[in-house]
Structure formats: structure tokens, C-alpha cells
Length: 504
Image (cartoon, rainbow, N blue to C red; front, side, top):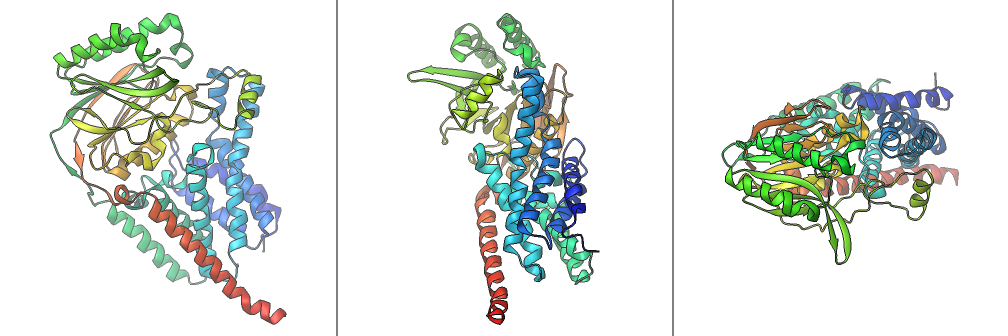
């Protein structure tokens, strides 16, 4: 039965989108990502471009409506918006990002003639990944959530991550789904199955390659998880108790080489706490031969600017200012419209300035490291800009904005990708969870529980060398897919030329 123009596909598309969400943490059914994309690619075959866009949009509503539903918690529980306002903005948020699967569907049908197997198999994965790249890097400063590669950290396709990055590994996952659609009708079944075996087998073999190497002795680390509720964090009456808590928990771990505090652990600007609190703490750190990595907002007056920053205290002192800001969290894009809407529903957000791109690396434990503040850990290009000099990665974040939702699990999953791409240990310090030590292969070495005041301790090895992805970044993969897409479009025109001649 031909379902190409049936509403059967329309009704099932949101369900397939929900299945995509279930492929990510904390559910981790990685095979569902392949099944969801296979359904979507099949739904695009034999229908009009407008119908494909509709099915892509419905798929996106299911995926983003379930996968980023935690936006409601940040707006209602901590942003100050009412129930109706929070629900309205959450729906608008999901509806906006659902436009991108719709765009992929429209372009896939416009690009590929359904009668040519190779073009049909390759075009949908290429376009899907190029749209993911556009969404992940360019739209509203980038939103790479629910990109297919993050669902495959435990599968054989993870072997491609240090080589091709998230977009290369994601393309192979999408290609697998597209090939699966062609296997079902039985056309060239053995050849297609053999191709998948080779692709997945190569990924499994790549997982056993060590792209980087040890360059020094183990470093003892302690990451402080203060577990301070987001609605209490910035209350003036709590400031002193917060500072004393972090000081006390730090003093219990002077035996560590490095102690790390989470994002904006200090609920005050740097100049307000530097002399009375941070300078004495730095002096104590020097006495114990410990380096502190502390996150604190910084305000400058000439001209007046505010930065989300990380500073180091102890033997090596320095500062990193966050470069990639979170839209609608640390700055307001689409002004003046966004500011007008948020003011109407009583949401007040930060107004930070991005730091410069080429900042010197901070040092702790005797080694330089790459600093990633919160949202920066979801961008692969930011994690490789300090290589090969950096020996490990440090990510400080605060997922307390999203309560007991799936967001902290998704965020940690994305952060693990950065360790795999760089071949470095990742130290991830959070306010309420998930604080973790991640190995260069993306494995979680140790992890603190959610919503508990604790200090996660462990040992990491400083790493040197460069993975292929660290050398090349995303550009070769993206340009390769652009060239491939242009070739597919050229093939389509060549294949259509005889039909046009016959018609004339």
C-alpha cells in the first residue's frame, strides 16, 4: 500500500519526534534515533515538498516539544513568569525550532529525484546535517540541542567522533537511517547491508585508537557542588553564607592540586569580594600548593560592561571571559521585540558582554587548560581553540535553572562529546549537578548525584597530542557535505534532462 500521500505519516510524525528524544539521556535508547530518522526519511519519499515540510514540522514539534520542555521550568520556577506566559513561550520555543526539520524535508524533496537510488539515499542525510549545522552554529547564536550524534556516544559510531566530530558522526548515523529505508523494499539489499557493516565496523575499530597521549603525572582534583537553590542564590541575605560554604568545602580539600567551583559560584561581582574574600583565599591556596578555579561575574566601568568569567587563584592567577553567550539568558537577541515580550511577562535576564576570542589559556595544577562556561560546552569549535597547548578541559555550569528535568542529563551528554573530540579529560563542576570527571574517550569516570551538597574528588592525567578533529575542526566535513549536495543537485538535473527533451 502506498502511504506517500496518506495522513498516516502525518499522524505518526510527532510520535517519531518523541522517539528521537528518547534516544538521548537520560533514556539513552540510541537506536531510536536511527528508527526516528528512518521513519522521517521514508515519510518524505513520494510526496510533495510542501507535504514533506509539514511532516518535518510535525516531527520537530514532537522532538522539541518533548526534548526541550525543560524551558518551562526555567521560565516559570526561576524566571518569574506565570503559568500561561511560561507555557506560551515554551510552545513558541518548540514551534520555532521545529521549523528546521521542516526545512530539511522541503529541501530533500526538492533536491532528490525519487527514481535514483543513490541520490535518494544520500540527499536526505546530507541536507539533514547541513540544516543541523545551520541551526547549531548560526541561528540565534546556535542551538545544537537534540543533534543526532549526541545519541550515539555509546554506539560504534562514537569511534568517528575524534575524527569527524559531531557533524561527521551525525551524518553517518543519518546515512544509516536512510540506507535502512532502502533495505526494506529489498532493492540491492545485500549490498546495502554490507555497506552498513563496513561503516559500523570501521567505527568500532576507531574506538580502540588512542589519538592522544599522557604528558605528565596525575593531577588530584576536587569539584565543589554547593547545591544552592536557584531561587535562593542571588538573595543578598544569603551571600555571606554562600561564600562561607564554598570556603569551608574548599578547605576540606587542600590536599587536591586543583579545586574547582561551579558557574557564578560567587553571588557578587569580583570587585565586591576580591580584597576581603578572594585575596586571603588565594594566599591560603598558595600555602597548600593548590590552585583554585573560581567562577564569578566581573564588572568593568570604562566603558561599563559585565562578563561571565572564570578566574584562577593560587600560584597562577588569570581570568577568562565567556565568549559564546546564551541567548535569552545572558543577552537578548532580536531586540527590541524580545525585550518587549519578556518585560510583558515579567522575565528579567542578564546583560553580559562576550569576551574576546583569543584569550590566553588559564593554568592550574601546573598545566594550561581550556575553559568552557556553561553553554560553551555544546560547541566543538570552542573546545579545540586552545589545542595542542591545553592538557585538559574545565567546564563550569549551573543547570539549577532547569530543576529536576532531563536537561542536566542532556547537557552532560553533550559535554562528554568535547572530551572525545579533543582526547582530553573533562572536569565538569556544577551547582546542583551533574558534576563529573569524563575520560578522553567520553566515559564518565565519576559523577556526583543531583541536588546534593558534595565535593567530587578524583585524579586525571594531563594529555597531549591532537585528534584529527582537533586539527581540522568542522569545516572539512561541512564543506564536504556542501560539495556532495551540489553534486547531487547536478545529478538531478542530468537525470531530468532526457525527460524534458522527450516532453518537448
